Amino acid sequence: MRYAARIEPDDNVFMVSFRDIPEALTAADTREEAEIAAADALRTAMDFYFEDRRAVPLPSEAKAGEVLVELPASLWAKVLLLNEMVRQDVAPVELARRLGTRKQEVTRIMDLGHATKIDTIAAALASLGRELSLSVR
Image 1 (cartoon, rainbow, N blue to C red):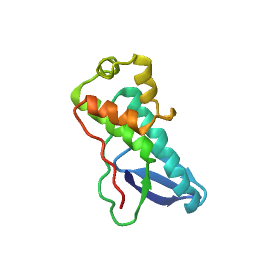
Image 2 (cartoon, helix red, strand yellow; image 1 turned 90 degrees about the vertical axis):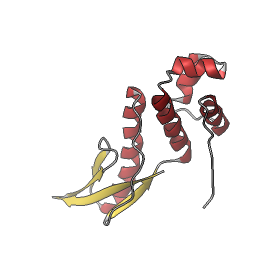
Image 3 (cartoon, one colour; image 1 turned 135 degrees about the horizontal axis):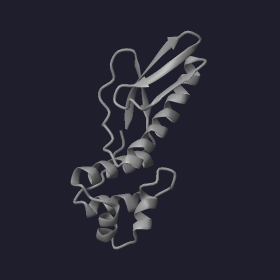
Image 4 (tube, rainbow, N blue to C red; image 1 turned 45 degrees about the horizontal axis):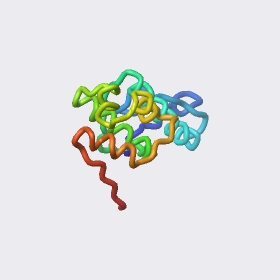
């Protein structure tokens, strides 16, 4: 759930970029502000993947000098669902059929701005033959 970001000074700002999510770019006046802006940029970039129904690249190991930026668990669960739908080539209408619900409900599940119960996401993954697993470290 954590993506590596590089924060580098560039003239009078700090530029933020992600190796794994090239769409996530931002800048801020201070390094501290850049770290906060990085989380927003990462979240916003996820919208592009969901709009295009493209698999989200999984995070790679951080390299020296990079910071880790975490996606909220609720968003991460939706990323896992999207990736599985793309992998299996399952359209939202087909997922709705498997869940015994309407396509509008699946649209809400896949909406990053909509709060979705974790049980609903787990059920959607189960309909794809997958199991959502949570752990505490």
